[in-house]
Length: 110
Length: 127
Image (cartoon, rainbow over all chains, first blue to last red; front, side):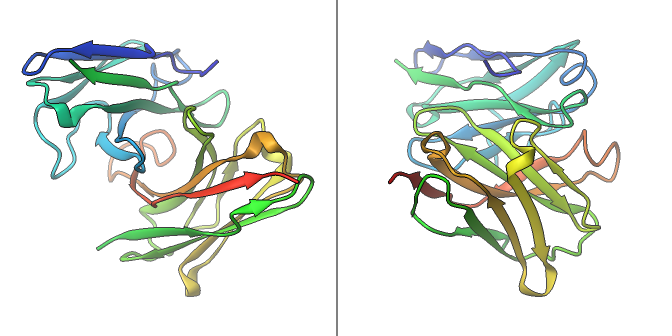
């Protein structure tokens, strides 16, 4: 029942490309910046993409973000086993006056 | 190096009040381009934003938990404190604090991001 909708899981083979979607509405993604966080097993979340498509210093350029209308996507190319993690999208929601997260997507590298 | 560290009780009883402290280093809570948020994650579940506070003491709370939460800061101690009243077993979670970064462009609420995060502290609510 998260405000932002993500697929619960995705899987792909090593060296391939995968995308994770994040669907929202005009009160969040449609008008505000989308950020993506990576959570490795047993670890705290880490910023992966900010302001829709910007890459923080130190994050691999295999990760990229995009947004169109009320949906956003995270793409990971050249998949590696170390990319296995949970991925969360987040955005400010004008109606709720707070940050909303997606339900998270578990990435499995086959 | 910017770090945030959460501290507080590991175990609280139902109906008790939880007090968590986030101690920051490497930046000042008086920095107008930064703030601190609290986020929690029940075991095996998704992240949930709880509250934030900015350098000018502006605060905001999760709509669903607003009546139970209070956030405050002590700039001189580099600490942000979150209190949650009337704890229940469903509040069992790992609680994180994270720095909010405000861009030079855009809106301070709508365009900020969390980086870095603290390591988190697991709080269990049980009698």
